[in-house]
Image 1 (cartoon, rainbow, N blue to C red):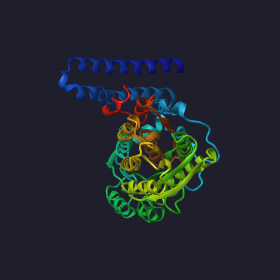
Image 2: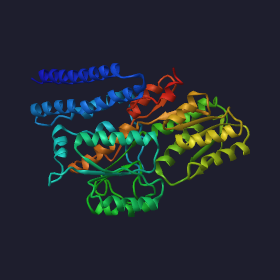
Image 3: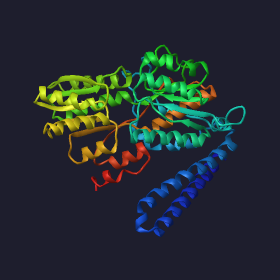
Image 4: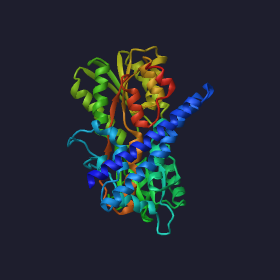
Length: 426
């Protein structure tokens, strides 16, 4: 019976997807040349509208057969593309307070649990979700928020606010006060400062809000009591791979500098230091001549410029993430140093354009912002269900090159590669 059911389910999904793409193709043929950009976007929008409906049909069929104890198919299907990127997590990998990380595949909901969340509050209104991330990372944030929307649409959760603290602890405290007035059931947030965050999120803890933290945690908060869980990228992998990448792009020897986020922000501090340790362990002929911090992104340019002036033989930089990496690249350009190579983390169009056009950025490690957004919502769902949640779950990362840029962008952002980037790989 179960085999017959699975055949039926696959058939339903196949028919739904064929119908969607056939309709999209017809519309594209009828469009005029002036509407080319709109036509390219239209099929994606139509698939997004139809795919959840097909997934819900599968969910309903599975629930009828199993009583709702099976893992919800939509959650399994949406993660298919990440399968080859996970590995056995080493014991050295850890969370902000020494937690043992687990892969995000541990975050699942059953068909019955999904239905329970869709039913909403006791008064029949949908559960409500709000966010307060650390800062706005452009296309990274857009991808993360797209996942918030997709997951909340599927679970019938209302999004009441999307925002960030812009790395300002005082703003974060004010933001949380504002969010609490919206009566959220879930708050997804990145505590900017552990000490002040403990006070900032206390009203949410007292109100029983399901708190989901991205990477960092407030001082003294207890898992399962004050917050539901922590969700992040594979930060150990980030530090390991980006450190080795810097060694490779400078040829295994010479002087390099580290331009890092100079704030007590655990995830960045951990990855930055691990990248340095990895570099020094694997490339003994490379000398880290400077390890300097910046607090605001534009300051990274001045930090790098000072290093170049003080150490004219410098061959490379490690930079905490892609936005300040572009400022460091600008410092190299101003100094007439197109020979200096940069290793960084995170992907956006400007960083890719710099790399693909032969600029200073030579190595980029991509995390998966869409899937991280999905994981955040699922952790929040655990809180709504009073379901024990893994303390620290991580999402895969991977290196990005000219050969795989289109594939990884589509996977990480769930959108087409920006046209100005695609032109550089044709």
